Amino acid sequence: MTRATIERLGDAALVVRSPLARALLTDLTTRPLPGVREAVPALEVLTVLYDPLEVGADTLTASLRERLGGLVPGEEEKTRTHVLPVTFDGPDLGWCADHAELGLEDFVGTLCATPLTVAFLGFTPGFAFLTGLPERLRMPRLSAPRERVPAGSVALGGPWAGVYPRETPGGWRLVGRTDAVLFDPWRPEPVLWRAGDRVRFEVRP
Image (tube, rainbow, N blue to C red; front, side):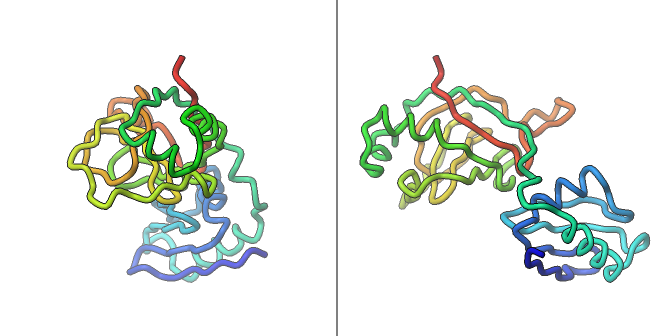
């Protein structure tokens, strides 16, 4: 069984730390446990919020351990794939290509060929931390963040890739832009993606 720890967080939450955290989220989404109100993913962490009047911490911990014991690594990969058309003209594109020791075309081709995964959501509504970058595409963050990063900017920062859903400050390297709408409060599902979804960039024709 994959190693996991489950700790209490206040009176109505448990923190599950496990490489199977994302698979557990998928499992809880399809087969909710009594008393669980919400499960919030992070990188190999799942915070499970529950109603203590419906289920006790010890009972829920036992149920979560039982679920974890029945999960198969890789099940979480049966998720959606989003293909985002990108215009690669960001102000840091040339710098990033040089840093990766690639020509512009090869840099863009390598990035578009890289399968990315939504590790977790955060920072601002609709922003996803995309994991899966190979070492040479991992870019150091700017020493001084920009005060304004345009909405739709495709960026690289440390081990992460991301797309800014709206104009915000930001310290990642900007390599392109997309028109994809990542957050729309009027949609049935306002945020485009969920933790575990696959993402691929493609060059806009």
